[in-house]
Amino acid sequence: MSWGTELWDQFDNLEKHTQWGIDILEKYIKFVKERTEIEISYAKQLRNLSKKYQPKKNSKEEEEYKYTSCKAFISTLNEMNDYAGQHEVISENMTSQITVELTRYVQELKQERKSHFHDGRKAQQHIETCWKQLESSKRRFERDCKEADRAQQYFEKMDADINVTKADVEKARQQAQLRHQMAEESKADYSSTLQKFNHEQHEHYYTHIPSIFQKIQEMEERRIVRIGESMKTYAEVDRHVIPIIGKCLDGIAKAAESIDQKNDSQLVIEAYKSGFEPPGDIEFEDYAQPMKRTISETSLSNSRGDSKTELKFASKSKGKLWPFIKKNKGAGPEDFSNLPPEQRRKKLQQKVDELNKEIQKEMDQRDAITKMKDVYIKNPQMGDPGSLDHKLIEVGQNIEKLRLEVQKFETWLTEVEGRLPVRGEQARRQSGMYEAQNTPSVNNCAQDRESPDGSYTEEQSQENELKMMATDFDDEFDDEEPLPTIGTCKALYTFEGQNEGTISIAEGEILYVIEEDKGDGWTRIRRNEDEEGYVPTSYVEVYLDKNAKDS
Image (tube, rainbow, N blue to C red; front, side, top):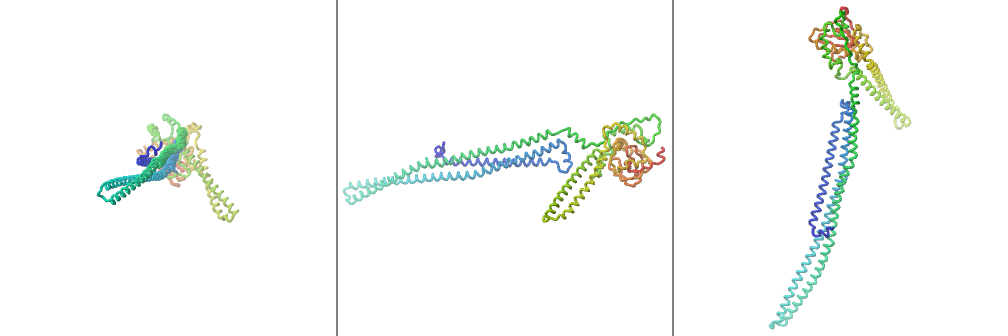
């Protein structure tokens, strides 16, 4: 099967067909190029999507990603980022292995095709020239033969005419012979040209054209093979990244399997546990038996100790167990005393860990400077050892400062850990909690004096459970007569009343006492008609009026 023998007369159609083949190849190149652009665009969109949902550094959102479900989501985003990278690999490989190679091959193919068809046209022009020569020789031979016949007829006519002179007859005979001789020469030339043309024609259709068409056929077949190889490469490029994409998907599945709902629940406990004990049972107060009740023994003032008030407390206390605990606005105290015990312990431990890391960093820097100084001592040409002394002194001072900070925070941490309640003692504390109410506290200035920072104490964590009673009744104070003054107090320390129901005081300030401490660690005071609230009893020195004590 050869185009040279089967398609010897289809030069124009072969030219069109080979051009169509090149067009198909260029169309395939365009298809692959658009596919690479899609892969790049897809990879970019995946990367942007992954980046969009990544938690912002040093933000509250980043802290929330400690849960296993959020960690799995982060792993999914990272795997999607790697997944996008594989699509970039597909684009790069298709571009280098298919688009670039085929584009170069198309240029070579066009040059080769142009050369082959140039040779074909040249062969056609040669055979057409030979054909024209043959036609010219044939026409000349035909013309000479006719001229020779006419000259022979004229000679015979002259020879038969008796009136014509002998000289005219001889002239006609010589003319006829000349014409016959020219005809013979034309015949010989025509015969020679014909043989030559037949030879050229045979060479043209059986040698030159088959050879040229064979080269064109081989060129076309190479094009077909090349586009097939490119399609195979197209598939292999995709297949090459499938295992890696599979690993990305396996990573997502593994991240999903790592989600631990129990662990997340425990993290919620660690994040929000206050460290307080739940409130215990409220003791029954028997109003049927006559008894002398003092101000310090009542849960609230005598004027508002009826059963209606207690019913209101029961209804209002739902969802309001710790009325003095709420988030501070702005920066809190250095020792985190504004936080519940458990949260304060966590913050202090975190601060200690951070300071220890900074100490280790400074120590590493000191070791590096020391080593550099030793190198300078051994090799003075590299530098002056004395130039590093001030750096060593500075680093040493930083380490000492950090160690003092660590000691300070560890002291607070030890204090908090020693005061955190133990669940095994819960029953004992609940039973003893209300006994503390019956202990009058007149001179509370010495109580808990060692902790004047407003932090939660064990007594406060126990007795704050009852403090919500007073807070729940605050709503009624606006409609009733203000409580009478039962004494005065002097502020021993400055207290920032940032929580609900508290009031701020300054050191040395004189204020009025309107309700003494009932064992919960808080005293209710008034500055003027519009400003009143609770302050820690340990922050003030109370002077009760004699009449109030006797009543």
